[in-house]
Image (cartoon, rainbow, N blue to C red; front, side, top):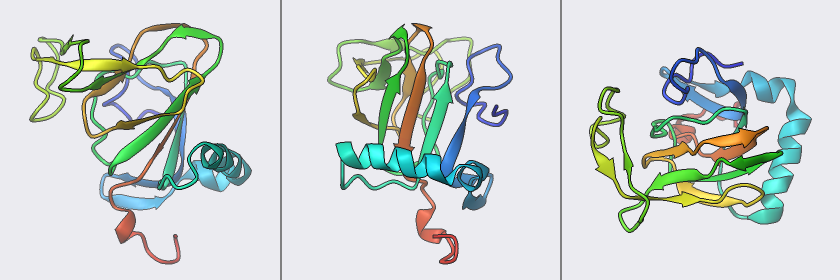
Length: 173
């Protein structure tokens, strides 16, 4: 259970079910996650799964999620491309991403908060829905994105690079 990722929590929820394996950057702190310390073999298994799909994809961390649809957000502490896959007995749950060439617009809730200086409440953005169920999919987490509604049981893995990885002390690498 995670209480700190308020930028992705569905409205009305006070926590999400998920944790990170690997490097984290939060509130000016940089370190190795408790999840990695507790589950090193799980991390190795997930790394092997990604390496079978994309041997050269660079990343520092894996976010594991269970049964929540992230609200529109931007991954502020991520650098570059992320990789996502979802699985489980569910329908729906695509990943909507901002794409100027996309044909599936999304309007941010006018009564909500601005997501960032670019993504302001009430504005409409072009985008597209990416199929991520049982499909490894690359996307730019620095652009607006969210999980589309789904029914059933849904797990997802997101591989990403923490933006401050270069500042990681040598003994932590």
